[in-house]
Image (cartoon, rainbow, N blue to C red; front, top):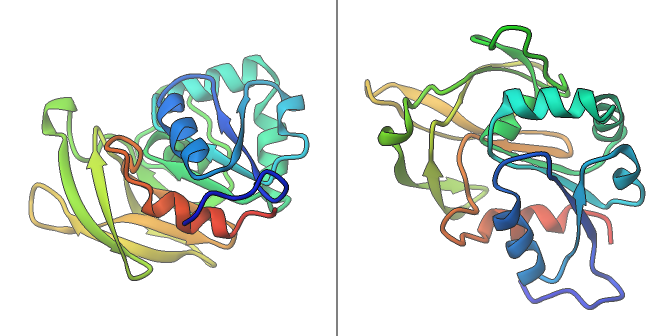
Length: 202
């Protein structure tokens, strides 16, 4: 995807409370998007897209509520803001968690059930090649969640096998929300970002 011209480049926010913010910002800027760190409700104004990055979903939850950002995030996404959620971002977007931490809340914008840390600890991290929308995506699974149930309006984009050889869902789409279990940004992979950016307003 050629870099967008400054006049047409979308403005993409990255939730910047904690986690893999810098890697997403670097890829977005490489692809010609304007970027903004999202920490407060006002940071959502005028965005063409939003990324919920990897990190710690419990920290996202606590800090977003502390900064009164959780409800505006939910409203923006439910209002149609194109959203890409990766790893912990998938957890934070989900409507239901199988194994939430004590008191953990989510945005509830994605009609799926998610199991946290389904691929095990950090030492169980792995690199996998997936096919999403006909494109090859190199994917880093780091303490990754899985989708255990999908509700109405959710399309399964990709599955892989867990440690027991069982097929598990690792990528879904619900309208303007794309959510994946893995980190596409860890190794400089841009395929997923390129495809997602096409759906963002310019």
